[in-house]
Every structure is written in C-alpha cells, then in structure tokens.
Image (tube, rainbow, N blue to C red; front, side):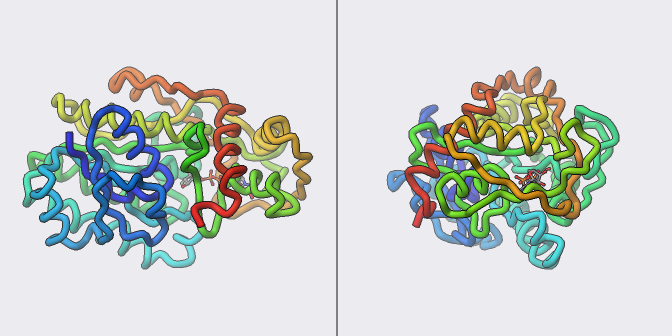
Length: 328
Ligand code: UFG
C-alpha cells in the first residue's frame, strides 16, 4: 500500500519508513527538513521537501501516488521550547495539522495514524496511565497534541474520517545495525545525552533532580523501542483500514526505569564510567510516567519485540558509536 509519511525524515518517522519498506509497503515521505535529516530516508523512497500546510503540494502527492493512508509525524516536539515559544507550537502543530487534515478530507484520504504523546496526560493521578485517564497537559507541546486529538475526534464524528492517536511514552533505541538513529539539534533526551558522554562529546550527564518521591529519588519513565513504535503505526493503520474505531492508544512497555537505573544500564552497555552531576529538577517533569498499553496489545495485537532496556540502549549505542556527529 502507498502510505504518506509526514515527518518521515525525523527520528520515529525514519524508523517507521524503514519498517514499512521491510513489510512490503511503499512509504512516500513529506518533510520540511526543519528538524529531520534527508539522509535518514532511503534514496529509493519518494521524498517531497515541503510543508504539510501546502494544500496544493499535498493534493498532488496524494493524486500522484494514490495514497491510501497517512502516518502523520510532522510536528515540533521539544517540551522545553514549547514553553518558551508557544506561538511556534500552535502554528506548526495545530494550525498546520488542521490545514493538512482539511486537505485530506477534500482528497478523500480517510485513514490517519497520528503521532501523539504521553505528555497529553500531564502529572498522572494514578499509575499505570490508561487512555481514559484525565488529560491535563503541563506543557504546550502536550497541549497541542491533545488539541489535535480533539479536532480529529470531532472530524471522526462528523466526516468519513478515521484516526488512531498513538500516545508514545519514552521513545529510544535505533535500528540494530546502527544505520539510522536519534539526532536532535539540540539534544535534550536522556539516553542520547548519556551516549554523548560515552562518546567523549560531553564530560558528564546531569541528573535533573534526585529528590523525587521514587525509590532512588530520580524520575521514572517507561522506555519503548522506536521499532516497536514503528510496528504499532502499521498495525494501527491496518486496524483503521479494517474498520477499527477511532481513538487513542498508549504505547509503552508498562515498566518504569529511574534515571539512575538508565545510567547504570548504559555503563554496562558502553563500558564507560559515565560521571554524573546532580542538578535541580527540570520544570514540568512528572516523577513517574508508566503506560498501561493493554488497549494497543488487545485491539491492535501489538506485542513489543524489544522490551529489554539494555538492548534498547545497546541499539542506540550502535548508532552513536558509528555516527558521533549524527547525520552530519
Ligand atoms: N533527564 C536527566 N538529565 C538529562 C536529560 C533528561 O536527568 O540530561 C531526565 C528527565 O528529567 C526525565 C528523564 O530523564 O526524568 C527522561 O527525560 P527525556 O528528556 O529523555 O524525556 P521526557 O520524559 O522528558 O520526554 C519524553 C519525550 C517527550 C514527551 C514525554 C512524554 O521526549 O516528547 O516523554 O512524557 F512529551
């Protein structure tokens, strides 16, 4: 099937493109390369350098390639930046995605898998977090994703439009052969920052707060391999093609690891002592985020294949070791 992947040059997008190819589908990538990397997309994949809000371009891609489903990653996705520059996030994520959705309605593309986030929940009241729990985002990034989920829910009620919103917990890892991986500028995520220390690019990792109400005082997150996310996107699209009901799905392993535990595992994987410094808390960081992902397991038949955190870190390390400067 011909599947339009917006943001297919980004971290999760490029791994999904790889997975779609492996499964015999034909991805077509639309990316404005504001944060993505052209080199992350195989040269055999049709690639359009452009914007999701460009209705004429999107319409021509859909017509030319007879698109029968969309996986929509294209967005700004830095939590910290979203608090400093909310206008950028409301424009890039909300305004542009609504224009994009309206183009899809006009062209008759009915099925869309949406890249959402655990950030829609904000500070959870109970763990593990279920899809029906309260959504009270504590940052603008999460707010924009929640707003779009609400827009899509209304479109699904009103139009012949069907969506799955995949709420990722902490994406990490890379293709095991180290050919593509995570390369953000600036990098803010824990595992790539740790591996930059192992690579000699930084001299220490700062732990953002050791006074949280957790066993070792550091924040707990639910890490999920990027290839397991990739597979969930295809399963979700197939579910929609088969008449599945629109709505959100959590994607996580249901197991929490503290920042200290992640660093210890990375010491084993890399053989590097990984010096740490304890810094203040990072504003907006919830103490614990752990997913209840039973809905995705039952409804989509999704079964994470790479649940072992050491293996996730090892695959990320393969990428970082081979590409210490990322895609440059
Ligand atoms: N952390 C550190 N030091 C660092 C970087 C991170 O201690 O140098 C800690 C953070 O405080 C947090 C944990 O490591 O406790 C993970 O932080 P990340 O930045 O890797 O990931 P987040 O949990 O903050 O954010 C991720 C995604 C977001 C998404 C969010 C959903 O990157 O896009 O999960 O909760 F919104």
